[in-house]
Length: 112
Length: 113
Image 1 (cartoon, rainbow over the protein chains, first blue to last red):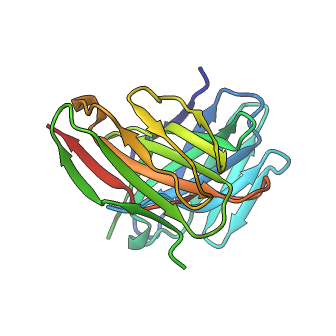
Image 2: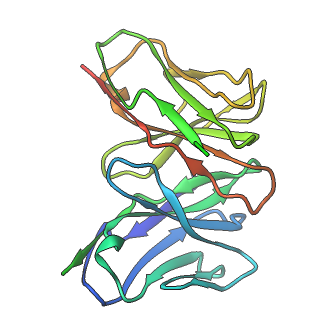
């Protein structure tokens, strides 16, 4: 079946440094790629998304890049802060009813 | 604006018991989804609905049932609870159109003992 692979499973970076999380997807028909942040005890919250007709999208310290040929997309967080510590999930659209297939998540730890 | 509300937040069930997880949204969204999240895993889709009266199976529907009698509510039913159904359950909704994100509730943590 279709799947999304996400790496690394845990990422520890010094406060102020950059963090990069990578995902690959298998369904060539996927055209929507959101990133969600999940804090402890809460539901996932959308932080940024990208569509297949765009190669890069930026929102302040967060950016996402998409390579459709290679079927991979990445989340970049610059100037990391303690509040960036959370679990991050990537997802890719599948099917015709806006369903998403999810990566396994990356636990991001920001060291002071 | 409440968004997506899930109840209860926590529940412990005995094997073989049944229960209903409630999900309500006040954003007039057509699309609603139920996911389960196991430790170290991504979200797995259980069931989804594209509108009142319409439901369909996701990736892991066995052991669950849903109904969608109104736009606002999308309850998930466990008929015969099994230890394998111990998980955190999330409900999500989205509006019409390709640019709409899924909005999530804060989850129900369910333990089957």
